[in-house]
Image 1 (tube, helix red, strand yellow):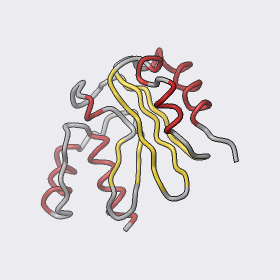
Image 2: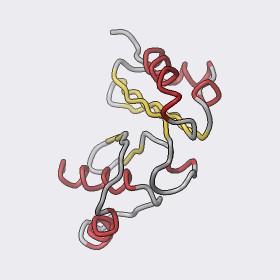
Image 3: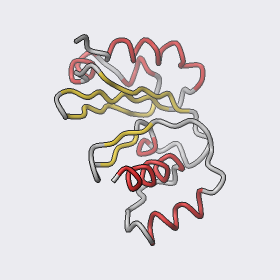
Length: 131
């Protein structure tokens, strides 16, 4: 099984024109997730020592151009939740009912929303349905 970190890095580099605000990669190996994300260009976010830590043969990558929320590093993707399992999501686009879904997540699902990102709302709804 080949590690996917370099393939994800190469893919994000090619897609860099689609989002230059932030970049992130998560990989999975033996039921453990390895996550690196930060504001900046792909080449600046992932140094060699970061790449060495992104072991695993399955992963997700994301380049961000903020269309919702803010430019906070906390909103860089992939986004992660550990309940009910370790789940990550990458999402491009805009949810049209974020306000209503956020209320459901907070009040009915008793989950904490840490950012203004509609992708975090999506992750929490997905995690609840997955449970």
